[in-house]
Image 1: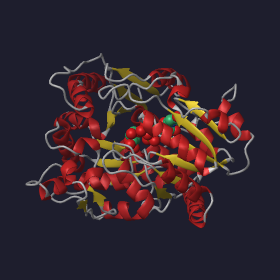
Image 2: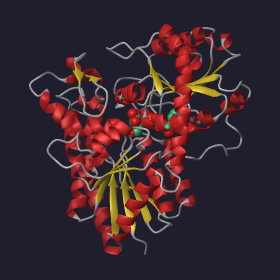
Image 3: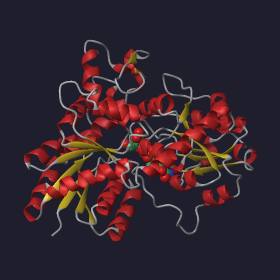
Length: 475
Ligand code: UPG
């Protein structure tokens, strides 16, 4: 029986997809030496039809990868608390299932490594208890990792002060990345009285206790952040664990679907590098007022565009309820679709993002700065307009605009992140048609080439992955 590796992603679809891709990389680069099991949490808090169908395909095409889905757990919605707090609680409730599974597997084969998502930190002690080397897989970039490693220090610095949400314009300094406004820390870190705040603080303080952190980036993409982390500047009282930069880790299933997606056929008819693509991740939706403003901005910009629109939030609590179908015309300005029909396409819910970015007609990408989207733009060499929405996206935006110089930032209202149509029109034109846009395009192409070299012989990602595989085989 093959030695095994167990992966434990947090429930977000991007986190699961990224872990699955990591599993494929490990299988491939170890010459199928290991088998891999991916643990999946079930809950009524989220609903991911896409992942359910993907899982069957993955096990068929990669027989060394299997999935273990845990029984559903539900958290009591009273007292009311933030969505992240309920997700973290759900993950904690799965701890006994994780322990049972690891013990069961250990009876029949060797577990060479247990790789967990940061939000699954509750399982770190299980790895230690069972003497299984335990690693984090960090699905965001090094700028974010450094900020999380450093967060316990920021927490102490502002201990006597108010919550970050109340510190507003106060600028927080970090050793490895440009300063960040207090209101732009990730959502669960904004309010000290949110139970998710203490969870995050705990997760951050546990990162150095692992046997290593595997991360979806490469040093040439984030030289400053990766170096400062490795030099130990982001961790105060503990040792920084080894960092393994194995990125870009992305899903490369592109271009083979029949019938061809309509937006790809539409792109086939557009001139080279003429289309700006707007897509805001798996959950990025806007108020109706903001949707109308985006439409006005795109109309004013005069540029060609492909825009993926999700339904506006149904209410405050159901953050994950993304609908496949809804009345698009009802939320757009009257007559908009007809006025822009010769140069714009609006699609509901989802577009095959990688296929779109790789298409020759696409010349710019308006993104919410989710890390998978950033990495996909890097791999395809498409310059970005950064419009962060939630989670760690403001942090990614800072790194992208100030450090990596791969994006223009859009001006947002501080209170709620609102962007006016005029601002969007101006920035879209800047991205598609200005010297600044050209500079970004050149930089993006440079990074696209670097991304190829990390997988060449002695490239940084191949080397990091080989180090890990060797460690696990010998361990
Ligand atoms: N995608 C599509 N079509 C769509 C929308 C999304 O193919 O219409 C894909 C996209 O290609 C990418 C993924 O879905 O692979 C989206 O991932 P990402 O850009 O990381 O965004 P989120 O889904 O928002 O990801 C969550 C967090 C984000 C964080 C990321 C990784 O919101 O902030 O960086 O997880 O930790």
